[in-house]
Length: 178
Ligand SMILES: [Zn+2]
Ligand SMILES: [Zn+2]
Image 1: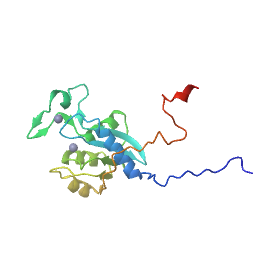
Image 2: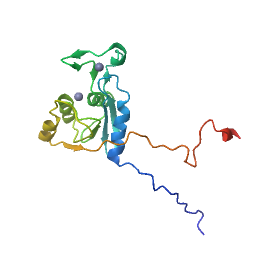
Image 3: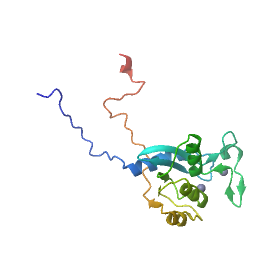
């Protein structure tokens, strides 16, 4: 007799995300922190399935947000924020983390400047699910040998089913302390 029994629970309607879907979803989550209403972008830098840094388009630390003080527009572009990719690279630099050989998951195709920064930081693969205007990213990635993958946009729902997980319960459940 085994000291345990195998219990199989029907999870046929459960679809576990692939690694690429998972990190793209994290990039979408990061984009929720963006501070410019003209564009919400998120970036997750990954190596060996390990998150090295995250970023979203936002103002410099301690300076006003577009949402509060308005956008600073030059030639029809808001220049108040750093883009998500730059902020992720800067976060890694603040913590002394090498990005060499890593993958960048971005909600949209990087702009030309961010593409060049990703290449220079040693990123070897870029994964996106939407496009960006007037960018030469593809050209720079191609010339640098960076793999560019366009994947479908992941679903925007976070699947966490507190009601059906047999080991979880709400804090306010009546029987929590009984
Ligand atoms: Zn703005
Ligand atoms: Zn950019």
